[in-house]
Amino acid sequence: EVQLVQSGGGLVQAGGSLTLSCTYSGFTLDDYAVGWFRQVPGKEREGVSCIGGSARQRYYADSVKGRFTISSDNTKNTVYLQMNSLKPEDTAVFYCAAGIVSVTMDLMPLREYHYWGQGTQVTVSS
Image (cartoon, rainbow, N blue to C red; front, side, top):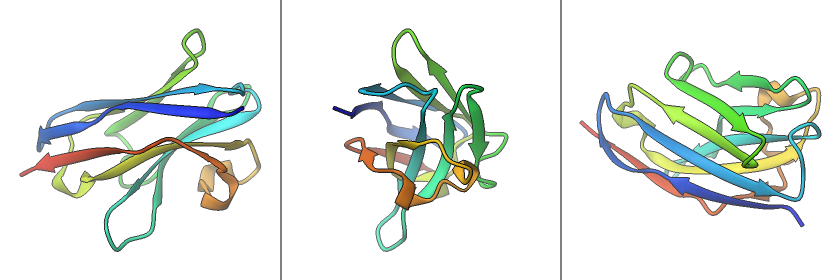
């Protein structure tokens, strides 16, 4: 059974940092990608970053490139999202999700992610 459990998040001032964790079970990153998505009220859920495949390919949305870093620890079955230089517009509920690695992995299409974490609020104050 595939499961994802998130931790981290919270309130931080603009320019600060937070780290989100997603501990997974029931699959390996060789076959699955784990993505981070975020959603604000009234807007569609958007892909932020993902990692997966035997080469641990990493992809980032343009809006977070250079500020966010995704990584994995195979010994802990955990994927991390290190978020630096946070901006008020990063405020959202963040979700991790898992889906089978595909050729469209870089696009992080929602339809390919079938398993989701519980979500965690990230609030960046100005």
